Length: 230
Image (cartoon, rainbow, N blue to C red; front, side):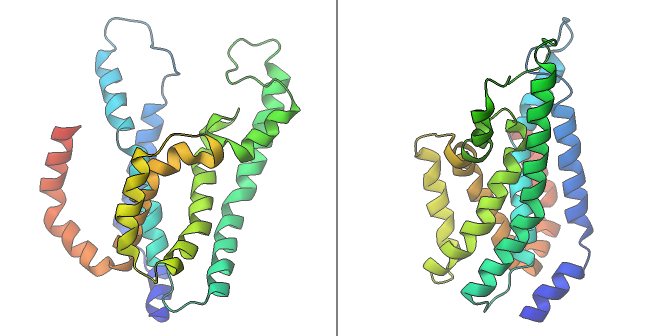
């Protein structure tokens, strides 16, 4: 099983790369305009298009992240192995989160006094704490996904062990999060919705051969149904 997980990391799965590429393109298309509605009478099509993208693009990203995580998951690992793996994954993400956040902080402080175009303005140095405590409400809220994914990398192996390896139980557990109160503390407002899709991705990665067979059979009717719903 350990050898299988290691080979899964090295084996290229082109559909994963294509999915990530499409998801990135959709994010770019969704961010072509700022928060305010653009001028002009012929923009309704784009607003509907943007709203459609925002119904699914972050759950898609989280599911793909879970899928890759599930592919590299090592059965039979010890708690020390899990913590080492979590530290490695977080170390790959979090320094970039901190550095970009600091760059945005300095940039806003530099330009906000003479440019009205700067949003989420800085009121004081204390707002640096929001980068770590309330990432979805901070001056650099667009970075929240890196923060949330780092927390999942830490939490998942611990919860997995608490449930004696029964990943399936995480589906109803994370689904109940949807009805819990919102909070920007530790990106909970995003994690409460998206952790379910991360678990779905992990399950798909841990059962990848069955997942590929299912995708081969169901992708077209699923896509048609998805487009109708959106």
